[in-house]
Image (cartoon, rainbow, N blue to C red; front, top):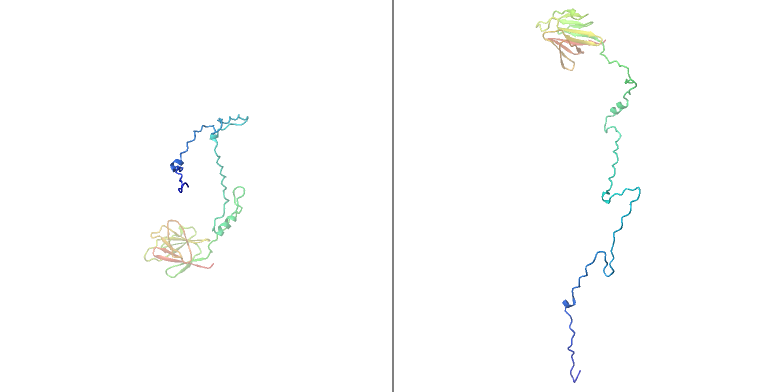
Length: 228
């Protein structure tokens, strides 16, 4: 203060502006490969190749590739019995006869097939007559017994004449009774006990059973049998 006055220092320091305070940094000098900044330049040399070792084959790195693993060989499952197979099928396979030397089966015994029981066969005619058979017989309006060796002859009365003179041969054997057509005009039809029709053709013999019907044209004979 001088003489009652206050002295003001007008020499105020100028504060630099923000633009003046923030100056761009100078870009760093370009670096040289192999030279560290601020130090003496050092030249980096690549490593020298190694001399090949005796007994080894040098393989370029480019051909190295991972080796694909070898897949394991498939294992075939053991044969098994199908699920739900019938028990009798498995039992039959277990009991099947094995082959022996020469390709023959162990069980070579021949089994005899069952035969029909020998009975007294009877021809029941439409007239009500019942004729027991003791041998084969030829049936017709005028039958000839010479057509079958050892056969007899049975003449029937057929007013309609649908029966031929020698129409059918009823042949008796230990296996049963059969009928065969003798080139008749109207043929033969056999109706079995179940009601099924069988037409007799040519020289083929058809088996007969108790309860069968034999149609000679319109003349019908019923087959019966008494117990032996």
